[in-house]
Length: 207
Image 1: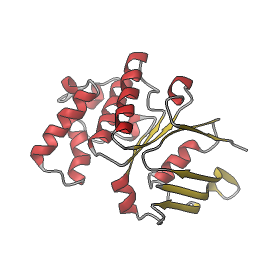
Image 2: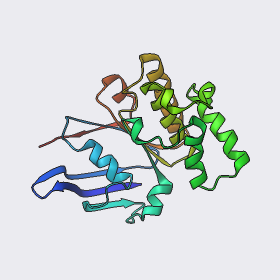
Image 3: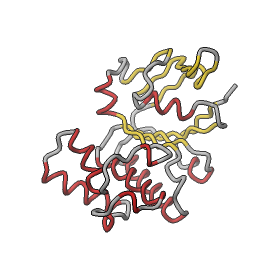
Image 4: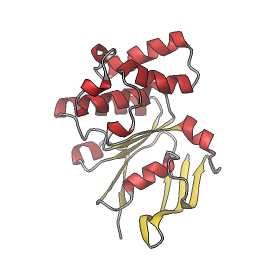
């Protein structure tokens, strides 16, 4: 489904944030991406999600260079820091924002918001200001927002970084359920307990 050929990126002329990297990812596959700090894991995720556009090399989806519209409809990303993802001031409104952009009817939208919040154990927070939530609670809300949009490909960058062990297990179980539904999963993590759940582990070397 996704093929990368010598993909690379530089933030400045003399230093790579992602050194030339190639990968083939099959539809419905679940991979973990690991590597030391500076190896380009997060840069790769940002390119895949269409956030970084000035890369070199080839990025193909179904054998074609994807348009920005194609990426937005196909790939969802959950950032390590939920503060970079949450937009609205109230929990339900934040999830509604993405659904509105996908032209989801109001009746279906309300049902979808309740379903994803219930799934992550945050339904009782639906009407609360996001500013009153803890880091872990914000991470769950951001996770729910990604689930609501039903992307074919889901990228998770350190998805459990702010969660306690019980909450992290719950989130990983939901990711497993998404994989069973046919979603393609790209998980970036340094936690061995999480990494080993994938079908395949891809190691990125900073050298």
